[in-house]
Every structure is written in C-alpha cells, then in structure tokens.
Image (tube, rainbow over the protein chains, first blue to last red):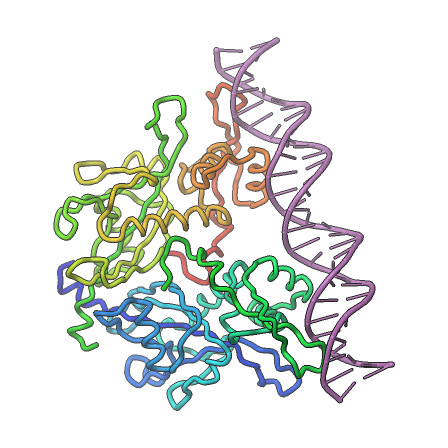
Length: 234
Length: 234
DNA sequence: GCAAAAGTGTTGCTAATACACCCATGC
DNA sequence: GCATGGGTGTATTAGCAACACTTTTGC
C-alpha cells in the first residue's frame, strides 16, 4: 500500500451512449425504432481489433463527467443530451497485465444528433441487443447500462432525451415502447405524461401526416431536478 | 494526458456505514432507534483533526469492494452485513493541493456487530442527522448515502441487515420507521412483508415480553439476488 | 382481570388498466 | 366518404391505507 503500489492502478473513464434508430434490419414495413450504441475499434493491445466503449484515461485537470463528455466527443463526435454516472468497475482481472479502474457513464443522445455522428473505419453503431464479444468486461457493462436505462425509464422522465427538441406524444410513446419492450395504451400513456407536468404544449402541430395532426410538445426541464438526490447536476 | 499527468490522480476507497442505535440523547422514555455512523479523525493534513469517512488508498491487488471491507475493518473493526457501491466522487477541488478520486461504498451492520465495534480517541459514532463539518466533501457524500438508503428501503429488503440473525416483525418495522422517518401500520406492514416471501418463520418466539410473545423470523437470502441488475454480488 | 402488543378481518379510496368512442386530417 | 391515428370518457380491477377487532402473554 505504498506509493509505488498506488501509482500502478490506472484510472479511465468510459461511456455507454444510447440512441434510437429506426431498425431496417427486417426490411421496410416494420420500421420500429430500437436501441443502438456506437462502439470504437481498439487499435492496440490488449484486445486489439475488438470493439469497445468510447473512453480514455482521466485527465488530471478535468472532472469525471467532463472526461466522459470529452472522450465521447473525441471518438464519436457526439454531445449527449443526458449523462449520468453508471458504476465504477475495478475487478483485478478485467484488463490483462495492467490494473485499470474504469468509471463508466451512460448517456442518451437525440435522434437528430445521432444522425450527425461520426462513422468511420473505427467507429460503428450496433444494435444494443446484438453485440459482438467486446473488449474487457464491456459486454457486462452494456448489460448493466441497459438495465439501468430500462429501470429509470419507468419512474423518471428521460425518454425525451432520445428525441429532438420537440416531439409528439406518439413519438414519446414509441421511445417507451422500444426501451421497455412492450406496447403501451396510447390513452393511458397520454394521461400519465400529462399528470407528470413535465410536458409543455408548444402550440404547434406536426403536419403532413395522413391523419389528424398531433400536437408538438417540448420538455420542461425546470421541473424534475430532484431525481438523483442531493447530488449536483453533472 | 501523458503518463505523468495520469499518475497524478490518486485513487481511494471510502465507506459510509450505517447502524441502528437506541437513541438516549433525550433521556430514558423514548428509546427510539435512529441511524448512526462511525467516523475517523484525520491525523494529518489536509483537514487534520476533522472527522472523515473510513477509507484509504486502493491497493494494487485488491478489488474495490475488498478495499472497502479492508479499510473498514482496519479503522473501525466492523464487518458489514450489506455492502454496495454508492458513487465515484472526482471533482477537481474536493481535496486541496492533490487530486483524489474516491470510490465510495455504503454499508449496513447489524446491531450486534455495531456494539462490538472499536471506539477510541480517533473513532467515534455520530447520529446521522447531527454531523459536524467533515473533511473533504464527506458531508455531501453522507447525505447522498442517506438518500440512497431511504430510497432502497422502500422497494428493497435490506432492513434486516440492520438487525441480528433473527428478529421480530416489530423490530423490522422499527427499522423501517427509523429510516423512513414515519410510523407504519403494524397490520399492513405485516402483510407487506409476508407477501414478499423473504421472511422465514424460525418456529421460535421471543419470550420475556410483558405481552403476547412474537414470532422470530430469519431472512431468506436465496430469494432476491436480482436487485442490482446484472452485476455480480460483491 | 387488565394492559399491551401480536396478529386477523374488513372497508373504502386511489390509481392503473382495458376499451369504447368521437375528432380531424390526407387522400 | 374512408382510413388512420389523435384525443376523450368511463367501467373494472388491484393494491394499499385506515381502522375495528380478536388473541395471548406478564403482572
């Protein structure tokens, strides 16, 4: 437990970012949106060539959430709409040869932002339920992030972060259905959202649909705040 | 972000441990149990003389939860009944002069164990709602741990960890009342616990009371498991 | 018997669900 | 008009809180 010992533990920050994409894997007619996430191909050992979560070592003069945002921007070009700490992973055997503790964040990006993201040889989007074998313990990490997202979706109001600035109730419902994996009654969903007081009617409507034009809503971010307890917002 | 930069971030593990104690601050007749926690006096700068959470630097060859358990034993002599990661704190200004990231755990100890704990010049128990100004950001950390404990008490079954091996329903209810801060209906509390299937009737009863002897229960730890998602148990 | 807490039964309220039905638009 | 999803109303039900009531012990 002397200084030499202490300095030999590396500290990194990684992020699991989710976005919603209209899944066209099964051809045209479905077009049900599902959860996707961007991964980065490792260009050095260990696990060279494998896909991994975006991240990197923590800089000495940046906060933890700042490091998550920075590495996310560096590798994928994404700026998340929602960001929250997930867990610190520090098992002895999670990285061969070296000891690394990873503080992992999870994030949501809007559909507009996700479309803008960098995609290249070393960055690719994967369906969250069809991941290959990832580097380190990153499969477990994604699994845990998915569990937290699904949990939080039920009692919190974060679904809007996967959409654009304004959205219809049907779009918001689609997000819930995609994440929670089951159909929801439109009528009851509407009432649940209205009673939460977190939606603001923009006064506008989405036109061009082959049916009655739905209202467009905006999220009221002055309401919740008190969702992560006494912790200051990142 | 070179190696020099990276090595200058220290990594420590601390723990917030809660125990229930019969509060005799207000004289005899109340004897309502309340939450207490042990703190350690700092014997060097920074914050020399102030009270702080038990903890220490992470050893290169121990897991995070192991480090929490070890430092807890080293300083207070306590072995927790329940242990869970709370949060990683890494703000730039949380420690003057040096940069330290603390991975904080929170824990529960049984009433029997708490009575056995080391108490001395540099270790003392404090009522959770009457803390002095602590070292670093430890006041915030305790506040957050309290929030998590109160939250988890409502949907999880961890209350038994604050008691002994066997307990009566009244004792279990007292734990809930102490943590959640309000009286609970004995009849409804009984049904809620019975329907959770986590209690096992030991067949024995607590005798020596000035009234009908209550049944003694034991906790069935084969049930829950699936409370922290896909994470392996620490 | 009496006090006190253990333990049981019953009622009423609230909130989530299921589903019937009307509304407004594009074609 | 007709099809389609937007949006409203309402009956049913499950779970929970409140509280009356019976049981079993020590004194």
